[in-house]
Figure 1 (tube, rainbow, N blue to C red):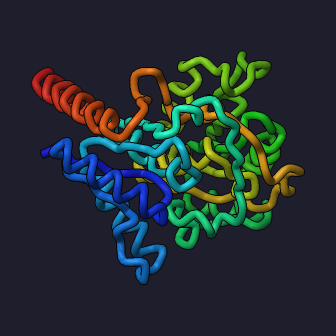
Figure 2 (figure 1 turned 90 degrees about the vertical axis):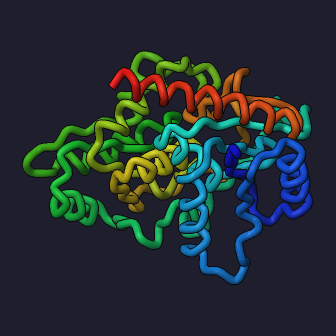
Length: 286
């Protein structure tokens, strides 16, 4: 039986019940994080979600209402090469603006900032990276505020011996004038390549948003250490309105986005079968 992870805000009980009924109709086993005992600590909930994510065939994401913890889950799944299907119940939400609130990093349970090192001063970042002897670093920050990546880069330039550092500026090089919705798929490929090559990821923890959350999840999925940089100034805008296409790291295409829960589970079974076949062929070629 195909196993599916349902990625959406945990407390949306009516939606969770509709998901379980759709899974039953499809003959699919589904893990719904909203069923986890609410008395558990945030770390226990995260560990339970990671255990489930690590054992499923497909992740289905609610595109009507997802935020930074779900973005982390999509990134984690991508690192583990688990296919993802996005679903709208409300077709009008496809082109709707989305209000994104970053807020305190501690509020995003899946990111696990309680157990990640966070540098509150530039000297702290230098010390963490020096002690850990990271040879290659990736700096994750907003591609619309590249000066923030430059600020972190200037701090890391003080490391001795010098380290290889790739930033968001390097990832989008040549495409800086485009809006995020216009980014070509090659930029996501560059991002994945940079993340896979890095010994550690340094994240702008003050201006953390949907694409950076995906990158944190991807790094965690690889087992790559993540360090928060919390010494940059706060952004001038806390509430930003975006469209789904602005989440350029998330990999949404016409092929993996559907409307309706039944269609989502049908697509999940298709991509799970295709993924299993690809892995089987890769194993035979090896």
